[in-house]
Each structure stands twice: as C-alpha cells, then as structure tokens.
Length: 392
Image (cartoon, rainbow, N blue to C red; front, side, top):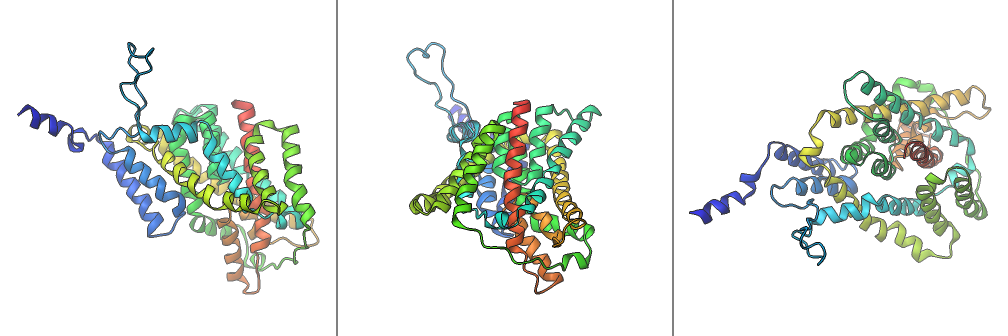
C-alpha cells in the first residue's frame, strides 16, 4: 500500500499546482500561433514548448543543482540540476545567445539601402522614442502605487518598444533577470504580430495621398562602402558607448563576414546553421522562465500592457518623423517607411511595402523601408547600451 501511495505522490497529477495548467495552456497557445497562424514560428515554437516543459509537475527541468554541505569538498552533488537550468545559465545569464544571434543577423543584413539614403537613419532613431516613453510610463505606474517597478525594471521593459527580441533579452538579463520571461515573450509576440499591430496605427496617422508617395530609386552602394561601414560603427561604439559594444560589435562582425567576400563559409554558417541552433536553445531557455510562479502575477500583466504601448509609440514616432522630414525635404519620404524604424527585421519593412502597394500598385517600398529597418536595429542596440551604462 505504501508503494502505491508513493507511486501516486510521484505523479504529475498529485504534484500539480494551480497555475501550471494555465501556463501549459499558454505554451500550447504559442504553439498554435506558430504552427497554425505562422506568427514568428522559429521563436514561438521553441518558446511555447519550453513553457510546457518547465510547468510539467515534478519534472525538475529548471531545478538548480543542490550540493550537500558535507559533500561539498568532495565535489559530489545531491542533485545535478535540470537540463533547462544549464541552457539558461550558459546562454541567457551570460548573454551569449543574444550576442550570437546578433552576429547572425549582421551576416544577413544589407546596409545598402541605409547607405544609399542616410537620412532614413533618423527614422530608425525616432522609432526608439517608444523605449524612453515607456520607461517614463513604467516609473509613473510605480509612483502611483499600481505596480512596483524599479528603474532598472522600467528600462528593461522599455526596450520592448524597439521590437528587437535579442536586445530585449540581453538588457533584461543585465538589469531585470527576474522579469526576463515576461519581457522576452512580450518582445517576440509583438514582433510576430507586426502585421496586425502596425496597419491600424499607420492608417490613423497617414492619408491615402501620403501612402501613395513614390520614392526615387536608390543609388548604387559600392563594396568598399559596405566594408567600411561596420568597421566605422565598431570604432564609434568603442569610443563613445562601450556598453553597446557586445551587441553592435558582434553585429558588425557578422556584416563584415558577409560583405568582405573572403569568408563565405563563415558567413553562410552564421546566417544559417549557427543562428538556427542558437535560436532553438534561446527559445527553449526563454520558455523555461515561464513557470507559473514567475509568470502569473500583476507585474507580468503590466509588462505586457507597457510592451504594446512601447511598440505602438515606436511605430507612431517613426511615421511622424517621416512627415516632419517631408516639410524640409525636396525628395518626399513615404511615411510608411517610418513605421519600419522599429527593428522587427524584415517584418516591419514588408508591412510598409504591402501597404504602399495597396495604396498605389506601382509603389514598391521594400528596399526603401529596409533602410530605417536596419537603422532600428542599430538604434535599439545603442539604446540598450545607454540603459546598461546608466543603470547596470
């Protein structure tokens, strides 16, 4: 009888806590969005599966290793710790996974549209306004006593407005590791929902005539310019904002491998197999922080609300900056490409192009939108460096 009781007590049904079925349901919902709706499946699928795994009662996949005090000198452990614990510690706590992904993104990035039309850099910079506005919002929410966010929590939450998942994870791991799960899920969910979130904001802030604006053809950018640019970024970061060097340095390395033309094998690996492997482990590690005890609380709900506000403000700021530039520019900028200033590459640029074609079937904006889109990646990394320098 005792064995039967012990067997029952070892089952997941006996050990199930209230919030675990809810979080497993959220994990299955993320899988649904990835598989059925096609929303950012490369990330939502492993994140959703990680959320399911970490909430399985009694599995202990996120348990930290336990070392007995009497066995410490011998180096023996009572419990070696869970599999997900080590993935999280190696890749997220150290910040290694987001940095490697940034290198892969750099290897896939073409700076040509940005170099051909440098003024689009202002659109990427304007879109980062959502980050700083949301920091103020999080501080205000805390000051009013609604939700208790520290200034470092507010900074980590604000980065969601840049719509850059790796940057959001990197900053959260440095400033607010206890909020990492909620911040990562919010950042990647809003990246995946760009085609749903951005169009209503764009239509609200632009007229049909503005969406019909056709932009002049981009000039040819030489190979030399493309090689020098990442090196110039690295030099400026090293001199002015060293805290952003991990992100922008790896981004510049990946891009240099692409544009130099002498390490095609390395560039191909960074763009494909390496970034795919890291994406799997990154997604699982992020999902591992979605345990019921850490996720089901008022602070998480506040993060999700502030995150969507941050993303919306960033989108609106890019559009309004484009409209402002048109007041002083001879060659008009289609405000649609301003919405691509958030660094959701390349989804935001595709939304701009699609809406341009809806307004004018001859209006091809994809390459024009890639300029502010790439600038948004740089802008979010710079904002992250500023936050870490001030608050880290």
